[in-house]
Length: 100
Image (cartoon, rainbow, N blue to C red; front, side):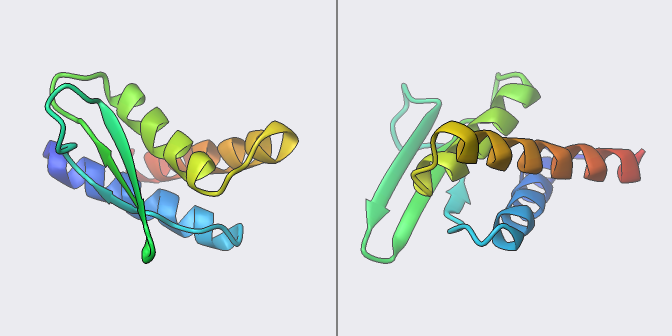
């Protein structure tokens, strides 16, 4: 599977999980506009956009940026952030198991 398809699939999985938790789902894209950044977050009146660099990075780092982006956009911290991250990672693991 190409990197672009993996990214799109991960974004769909995480977006669905976030919606089920009642969370705001940002727009995801790749790569960031800033050449030196691995992740950027832009906020505007329509919502947030999270851009993540995929090239030349470990896939787990990309996934971690997507998960943390959802947590940040929703302003979660403490126990709420832990619950959210756990749920998002579980969704990713479930999808990986189904794909195997």
